[in-house]
Amino acid sequence: MLTSLAIIFLLGLLMGSVFNKLKLPSLMGMIFTGILLSPYAFNLLDEKILSISPDLRQLALVIILTRAGLSLDINALKKVGRPAILMCFVPACFEILAVVFIAPKILGVSILEAAIMGAVVAAVSPAIIVPRMINLIEKKIGKENSIPQLIMAGASVDDIFVIVLFTAFTGLAKGDEISAMSFAQIPISIVMGIVVGIVMGIILIKTFKKIHFRDSIKVIIILSVSFLLIECQNILENVVPMSGLLAIMSMGIVIKAKYEILATRLSNKYNKLWVAAEIVLFVLVGATVNTKYVLQAGVSAVVVILFALVVRMVGVYTCLIKTKLPMKERLFCMIAYTPKATVQAAIGSIPLSMGLECGQLVLTVAVLSILITAPFGAIGIDSTYKKLLCKEDESMEDIV
Image (cartoon, rainbow, N blue to C red):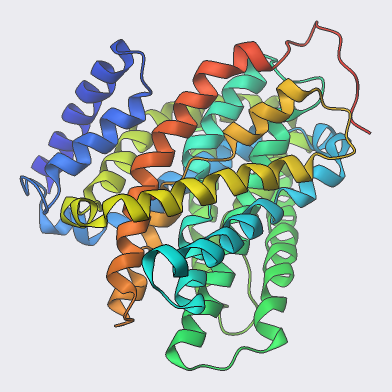
């Protein structure tokens, strides 16, 4: 296992550096490294690493969402208002409906199978979006209209919404009955996550003010609490739905709002943790990619993904109607809300493991969506923000 970790870090860093020199996002090099190391290529990773891969990817998500919370100004988010709420679910709905419309015609699947496929590809990747939005916040780019905050908050809730829909659709495919309560889990999960996160954030602030800890110890405490929140989500799954990841992000937001000096110091610590976590996350995402499925997919699957992506961008534009955002900033939001990776790697194989007839095709589309949208979104954000967003000192109109 230690040898596999060494290979992951060294090759991930090397390929990330190579892709950077080619003016491409380093995460593309890391994903490519994972593809080469995977059981479907050179098979250089220990089975023990692959068996705990979901937990390691979850750990990386915990780090980046905590970092997001510690950087997210709640007042700036309030200023965004209505679009921030719409971005949590409207683009995903547009994309799922697009797949439901086109997949039966092109891929020959049923409407329910197309809905499952749409739910798999509809979730954006916080792991790609959040670090880039934090970078923009630190550079004070897009601050006037809180563009990074808008995208970062929406991307974090978007995943919860899509995963609940995915669970409902796969349940229908197995013959389960879907009740109104199934869909009521979405708002309950979001509200519970926010409430629990706020409570834990307040408890941590009071603890840190009363008892002196080094910042490194505080990071360990917050990480431990974050892991427990994820476990609470699993334990309460059949009792009260709660989003552990949203609770973690809310906890960070509370610390930022109530104890900003500490939040700044902790954010710097989490930045250092992310250096290692990013490599592990994207190399292991790449390791889930079965190139055999990609080669079998053909043009039809690519057409479905691209059509759904365009419709998703229309959904983002719809969320921004009746705001005073200039067209350049709307275009940036549309581009920034496209990358997929982590959720597709996590749930893409579930329909196949359930024995659903569409399982292999869904997995193929999930893999392709990572390979197409992750680089497209990352390159799109990195290459357009200077042209499409304004810096703090540039005059812009406020959002209504």
